[in-house]
Image (cartoon, rainbow, N blue to C red; front, side, top):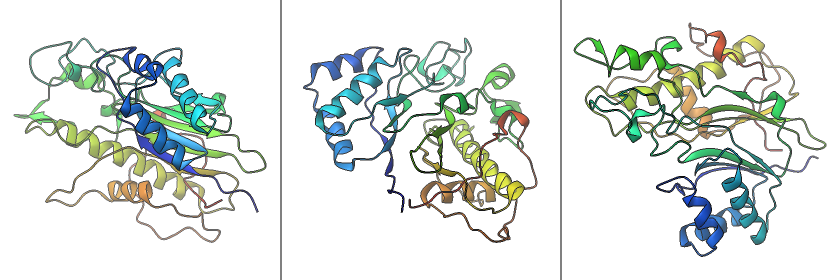
Length: 298
C-alpha cells in the first residue's frame, strides 16, 4: 500500500506593509508571528503545503527563507513554487469606484504593493513545472453568466475597468506534482477575495461568487466530459475562500464548488453519477487539460 500523503492549506497572514519586510522579519529569527506559524506548520508535518499570505518576490527569496526556517525546526521542503500574483498588480485605473487611482484596491487584486499576501506551495516532492497551468490572468467578463457589478444600470466602477478586471484576486493554478511510486498528484488551488469590504454594488461579493462558480463549473464539466474511469491521476482542490449565503439560493455550481472544497471524494469506478450538470461551458481560456477532480486517502 502506498504511503499516505499529507496535504495542508493555510493562510499564514504574514504579509507586511511593504516589499522585503517579510524577508527582513524572517531573517531576524525573533518575530513572534513567524515563530508561531513555523511551529504550527512543523506540528502538522504535511508533505505538501499550500500557503497564502506570503509576500511574493521574483526570485522566491522570501519563500525560500520561510522554507529554511521550517527546515531548521524539522520538516524539509526542497521544492518551493510561486507565480506572480494579481495582488497589487497595477491597472492604472480606478477599480473600486472611489474616484482615485493607485490605491491598494486599484490593482487586479487588493494589495498595498505588488505581490502582497500571495499564494505559494512548499513540497517534499517535485513540481512538474512544465505542466503547470496558470489561470490568474483569466478575465472576469469572459466567465459565462458573470455577475459583473452595476450601479444605476451602468458597469461599476466603469466599462474600462471591467474590460481588464481579472477574475482571480490572487491566483488560480493547476499544479501537478511527481510523487515517487505513486500516480502524479494535481493540486487545483485558488485564493478568492472575501465577499465584504465593498459597497451596495457588491463587487467583492459577486467576484467571490463567480470565482467559486468558475471552479465549480470546471469540476463538474470535466467530470461529465470524462465520466468516471479508473483512477490514473489524483487531484486535490486547496482553496482559500470565504463565502456567504444570500436570501436568494446560490447557483448549483457554486454549491458544488463549496462542497468539493471541503470534502474529498474518492473517484468512483462505475457509471457517471446522475448529477445536474450546468448547461454552460467554460471558455477555452479556462479549459484545463488535466484530469477530472478526484482525491484519495493514499
